[in-house]
Image (cartoon, rainbow over all chains, first blue to last red; front, side, top):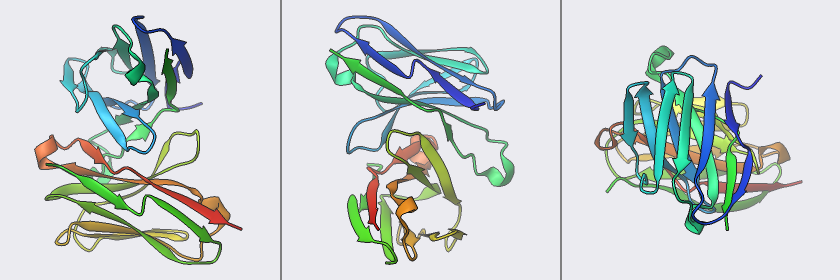
Length: 116
Length: 112
């Protein structure tokens, strides 16, 4: 079973609709992240959370919100979707306590979102 | 400005050849990562480099870090088709609250 799962894997929605992308992890990590990936660009950080009570904006948080419902769950919402939010969205987790302080990020499979 | 730049962005090469991908970054870093992404797939961690002179090797891939020059290299030795993928470097900077800043990726195509 995958350690980091994302639902849905694909989603088509219309401009103005509210949608939620969900992420769950069984790795026991405290830190979780949401990124978006656009063709020809690297990943850009939307929001991150270091624990259930900690939420931080990333580089491109406008138009997005998040909820950390539990240590294992981190959801991303688009309150009113717009076409330029069409992208591939990744959830990731990390653990600062990882040996040697590497704090590698482990990624989910991604959610492909199309906003019409 | 915190920047991570990779070059080349696209590389097509023959099997059996050697090549190097470069990752340059703008200011003092904390850690540098290399990730691999296969088409339509998620990202897989390859290496994390923590200090100047660090070298990591896995199979035909070798990564190194020069913190003075602010550059990391990913060297491919005797390339094989299975190494075709997009390779990303990502850097944590103190000024980014240690969050990862990503390069644009290098799309590597290895022809049989």
